[in-house]
Length: 346
Image (cartoon, rainbow, N blue to C red):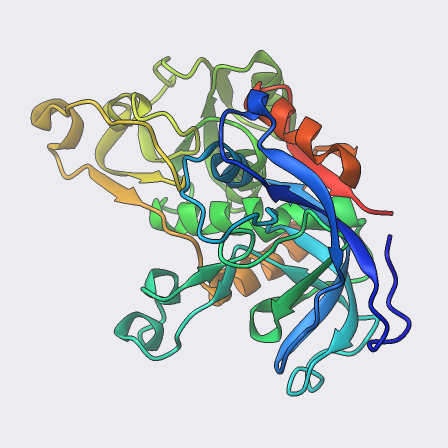
């Protein structure tokens, strides 16, 4: 791992970049060396110790998300230590502080969405690992206003997934409007769903999991799900709410048909394959609701991290070294990861 003993001395750091988006088998990621980035006013230079591997990173690498900057470094579940706090950032952070950086990296702060507490819809919003270089690297620069202080106790690899998988799952659960003690269906059971299930269970919900992976179904039952079936299966009882985590549009009508009257389906992914035609009577009538989930607000992040600190979710981690980022993404694409994948840089 590169170090920075003097800011005037140019150091090099290892990182991964999306060289040419394409199928993961075409090796779109390339490992390179760059100068350690310089933080500006209000920014933090973070020495990265861990970074979660998110399906959004896979969408970026494969071109499902069009690149917003050339040779972008993916990764937006960053845990690390502050190496340097730029002017204006030192009021809240000091060198050595443990911090996290998540998907939302910046907003305008002035539009009607920002002013109304919906900064996730800001038309000028910026994202870590898409609009600015992310955490598949030894170092990263983040806007201090969008960084989260992290506790000292839990291991890096358990904190990293909370910063996207956890936060997005929290927002999806809020968007699904699950009533107290309600019945929740989770379609797909990867990084975010396995954390969201535990959050819902801690709130007193009954959770039914529907996913194609046999290993994921076993994990769901171990974590306390009432049932775990195939992705196309009917849950054993009508659902008050459901969240679609799998990026599979064909599952939208399946999940809607499983809702009881007045139920809500929240679609949590940033990318979804084409949704087939819906039948009004079967899928939407009786006030069933279909909602999307777009990124998160900083308030979501703070609320989820506080709730996670109380119920301490069991984070099921597959560990990879930073130099194995391409392998981790390939394993994610092939459904070889149960739980979450995390890159470690120590």
